[in-house]
Image 1 (cartoon, rainbow, N blue to C red):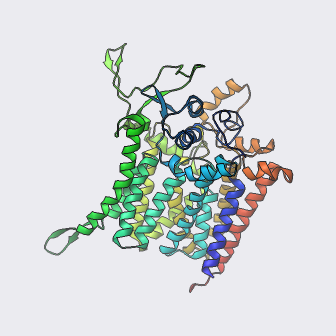
Image 2 (cartoon, rainbow, N blue to C red):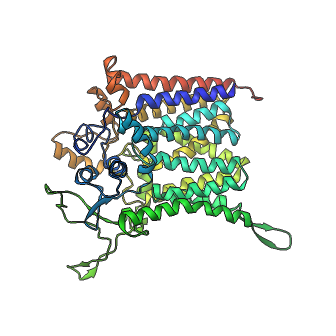
Image 3 (cartoon, rainbow, N blue to C red):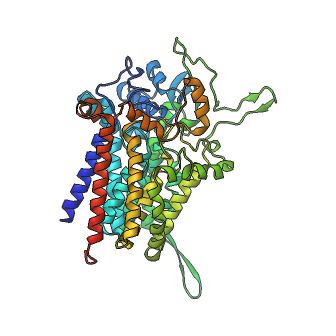
Length: 515
């Protein structure tokens, strides 16, 4: 019976993702990919999506990391320039991992949809992993299902499960590593954990810091200290040391790609020179910025700093960054997914029985928050909610399962959870089926002057899109519009999510202690 319930849980999540995934029919090519129906008005609305899709297209269709001019135009403004060639400013991992979806989709006349479907598949697996980890840590089955859908449909993770971003793949690496460490004790799983940590680097460079607490947690199985009455003893597992070789395949791939793309295995994509525009002849039409080599500042006659990954972080941004991610109307967790604050109680309760795991969770949450609070652009560009915190939401969701299990007979708490869940899911569904193009408040005034109208802030922009009967959902744009308008389509999705959550809450409340 439990397996049947899990199958139904997976099928439900798959249904909602299928109804929400963004896209339009067709295979974009060098003649059409820069048309507005694919870019601003279509599924490739923001530069991170376009930049990664451009690299994917170039790798699959041109068998090259170098962009042709049309592909380079698609990647703007996140476009690199190295050795007189246009290259990507993004790490290659996401483009490689989504290439099977691209090729399958292309066969059926929907290469963009197939590409996005790979991200949706990882998002689905993430919801299952939240459920499984919660159960391993003692959470009730129905509470664990609720935690899975809370993460997937009641946080900004929903908006990034239906488009082309790396966040769900990062979350998969994090959750899968935690699951392996909690579920298995052998050397083979440990070796695979090192493999997952290493593969996170060519996916997105900051991932190394996000998964650092997991690496430290795993390292305790190789190196540990024992404290006896008389002295301390230090131990090393020779067999455990061998598992560290799991990092080699991803790192060798990373070095190979860098050498292929930039002629230097240690050259990171984000540190190459960038260009912001291309003229009619296909040449860079603006000064190239952030030269990878030190140059002299003519006004001071001093060398300008070399572009590096480290310079993307600034400790002075820390306090403002934390406020932006947690409380601001632009990206704040309080505004977009307040239900996640309930997980704090679950993390505390987890420490009573699994103190080491609680420490791992707190370290993971803290390292990710600190990392992106110090990031040069804590808003994440134009985005829906805090996309950088999606891995954090997955860990917090496990805390949701714990606190729901512990207070499952507290009617007041269950009502508070459901109301916060319903609000959070309503907001997240807005982003999923409309757009992630929400500028931070600091850009609103300039944007209003540019467009000549009063530009709205936060998810009010998404509500306006629905009011004019627009949605970027592939199902809505191909079939759904024939039967309902965009607002009704949105209400149906939220209703499905809300009814499912309410049903699982009732089952949790009635669940016997022995189950």
